[in-house]
Image (cartoon, rainbow, N blue to C red; front, side, top):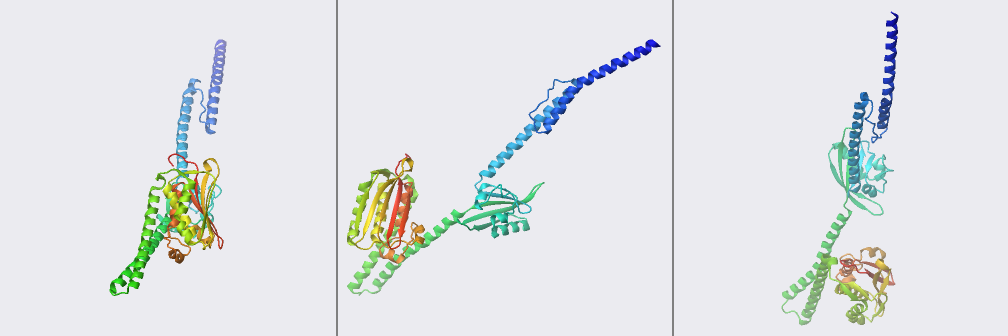
Length: 428
């Protein structure tokens, strides 16, 4: 009996020692699994636990590593898709505003923010009406909500630079949120061009109608009176001839403007001597200047040659000098000057024509280079102007990558300038 009891105690001790040894063997891999779980929970999905552990937990470790790898791959896919959507959202040419169901801004891209002088981050969560302050936009949003259908409307933004926007509003619904999506197109330039086109058609129709009506009227008068006195007949024919020349001048200017706009910077250019070009222009206007006893003074400074289309540049300078002579008082002086300003790529040649005429009101200066725009219509027609001379000057400057400018003081005179880059880049 004693032997059996001793044997039992020995077996118990052996089993206890084995269990303790097994427990110690499992403690480390279980702790490694717990550490891995904590790292995964904290977002460290790159962490991996060693699969070379106790056989009991090896499969669990391998499964956890596989789960972390798959989860990391899926998260990377979601992040990549989100980044693509963010890039698309930010790079769109249209303004995009996402409104929550309560009308507050959920998201806004920079294009839309610029339209309303807003900040995409700071204004997030604010009611759109507080940011945009536009009753037409608010009305569009309310109608879209009420009817739950897509709506489109043109709205006007009033500020330092007025804008016209075409806004498309539509409702959106997802599992977690709902609201309104606004897509905004800036159509200010389109509407401006439409206005310019309408004004151009109206103006050209009026400008052509005036000489045509005059020609038609006097011809009918001549035809209705075969025995008209020679003096009257000669006078009427002179008027018909003058109106025909005026009509021809308008058409020639329109064709010239059309050619410049069509070919633009593709027009052939070469190195042109500046001083001889200006002398030729003065010679072309010599008779008109002498008729009004106007002295034309020439001043040439700076660069001697310019890369330009000689015929067009001559036409631009001729138009400016001709205008200066027309609108200057008899016995006055007109100055044509060339100078160079700036250095390197910023260098430019400036051609200027300065008169001592009546000057131009400041309110008219922004529109001086529009087609058919005249400060004094009656006087312009009396002097034989077509209303296209300055528009041609502007487009000739643009064809040379240049610009035009004007300074004027009422009662003292005006100074018109053409600025053209002095350096030449092949292909420009």
